[in-house]
Length: 208
Length: 208
Image (tube, rainbow over the protein chains, first blue to last red):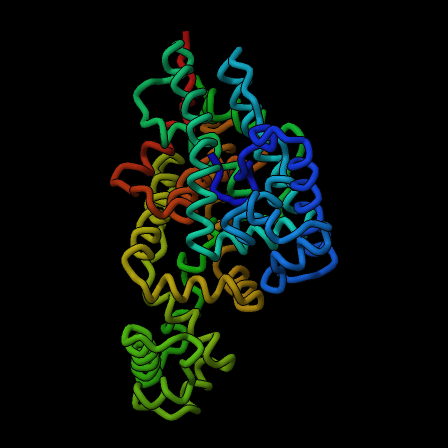
């Protein structure tokens, strides 16, 4: 659903690993990396060795959890800073679209408030391989969630079925992305998702 | 209207200068810079001296026309590669919005087809002062053109008057920008502007 790396969960959930000791180490590592970044360490200067030292674990522990090393770990740090993903309730297409756009809005706000998140976001964007992994693991699943909502709306007769589903989704997410990604000087007020969703659903033409 | 530097005219029109000899020199300088870039010269390696030599003029001639030197000249080169600006005819808001979005689409196509334009675009974006000048001289006037069309539509009773004009504009330009700027892998087919404009005007909800 969203093209910026600051907008979803790139790492498998810790629960998948299932061992409390690993989870504690994982949290310590992510917090260690985050602390270094917040203290002003540049991403270039960040190393698995420094992160392991700050987290009080061995380098091998970091590589066991993130075999790809620093780059893979960065995606997990982005995830830790992000808003929890939106969960459409499935009751009405209108409300589900508002839920997804409200999540986009909150991610946009989080990015404006966190210099570290912005720095990591640009880092991911400027590294094609990292960006591709972020895209494949995260953005694709957001698009799928959005498209599932839209297809359900077409099937239930709530939405027009004559538009390409990609375009249909962009009519809703495009205006929000314009603000969150392209015009960072513009406000992201409460109620913006509702305004966008209702305007696109009902149209902005005055009917006779 | 549009946040990418590849989308309008940053330089005063040559006609403003009014002397044919200056115009010929100006064209030679822009073409010289463009030739160097097309031959693979990086923007960093580009200098007023090299451009003047290739164009067959003195450095002073370049600085007389572009006192800001290389950076100012780059904005003129971007302009020379771009699509001529759209001119809304003022007959109907729907047609004027299609005209503006069709221009966005053509600029997006031009950028996809020109590596030099893409390179210059990222250069401008990553230099805040250059970006600010581009924004103030170009993007602002595009926004004003779009907003004039929308305000006319509200005044004539064609468009709803209860939405903020910024948001109203983004409902139309956002979906197109999503494709031209954020998802460069997606198509920009003929007819896309009409589809977006008509969908946003009429809404995508199925009415009982």
